[in-house]
Image (cartoon, rainbow, N blue to C red; front, side, top):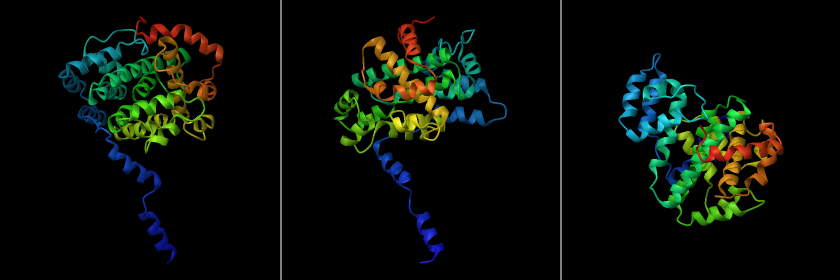
Length: 297
């Protein structure tokens, strides 16, 4: 067989990554919501029609209320408060609004079971705290408060997908949360054919979120990738992952709920990425409870 034939045969073979992605489609990753297509269409126009989009969002009362709440949250730090969906869209901009809307519809596509509801409440606290951390530590590597907030919402979105697919997955989570040394995702893969970080990354990709956000989801339990940044993952992805891990620590210390061992495994790398030390972590921990409880004015 000649070189040309070898090349053609090699190109015909799917890569391991592609084959894995195709196999994970059977896990049940939810399709991209129609509302995000409407936002994308407006973003591609030379002059987006904010009024048309505002009317579309306003038709969904819960979505409209959520978008207003997001725009008026303290982690964005806007000096004025949005009173209408139109104002919220203009304040956030279409890119940030698109991610905010994606986060708002995310939890509505899963059945409202008690375990999943507790999960979403925890994700909301991590997202809110992640956005607040950007305000405290500053914008670096182009990661803004809305980027960190969206990442926090989607970081563990693979978990409810696996809960739905595998009846015993909650027990897998308990084991992974209690593991002090082995990577979280390794514990998952000893009992499941995949892990929530990879599934969540694929979902973020299929929903057309940014590559950096998708990469941050995929590697947020990956000590090697975080420690070898930027060779492992991009600075933006690493920073989002580090902000999320710190936010989770602050939420756990504020509430005593959903305790994991991840900061012990990843905290050193995360502090290096964020440019902080243990003293700063303690200072943030003292201020975080109001943010976690969503009572910061």
